[in-house]
Amino acid sequence: LFQLFCVQTNTTIRRSLYFPAGTYRITQSILVPSYAKLWGDGPDSSILEMDVGSDSSFGAYVIQTADSLQQTGANIGNNSAQHPIDIVITGMSFTSLEAGVDMMLIDRAHGVNVSNCNFKGNLSANPVDASADIAGVRFDSTPSFTCKAIEFENCKFSYLTYGLITDENIQGVTIQNCDLRHLYQGVMLGTGTPDNGGPEGVRIVQNLFDNIGKQGISI
Image (spheres, rainbow, N blue to C red):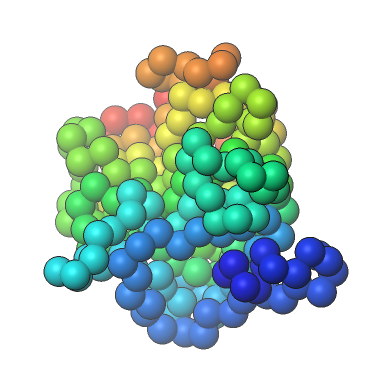
């Protein structure tokens, strides 16, 4: 991803990264930088699966946003790197064989479109409490770089504690035409200790909630 999207500074000649049908075993988080376009043959066909081997350590997320130098977390934007912007992900599935691994982290990103993707946890039954603490999507923002203009469309979230959860300040986030089932809670927004004002401008429209242990939406 670094070679494909970060080395070339002219965004008009960057290429999409295609994942043909298959299950891709990964042992570290996939870091997605600005202008990345990842697409597969469909969520039931192109599957990214976190699977820890004895010789590797797994990441906290199957996939997460990163800056133009592949820096993550508090290091995003250091060394004059560009924050993650304009990312497209479609037609893929994210899952984990490992406990305690979230599927996706949207971290300090602007303009992320995720469509026709599955987020499937490793829980074998409908969760009855929050003890597993596994999320399909989490967000992380800072006062100087808030996650905004994020869209999830026609995605499926299942066998997780939470479909999407955050206490962070996020803006202009849309969750639409999604299927959320076999979860403890579907969408959790600002129910803990809201950070920098908590979520705002979130649209949750035309979604299906089924086999939810507690609440479909909690705000």
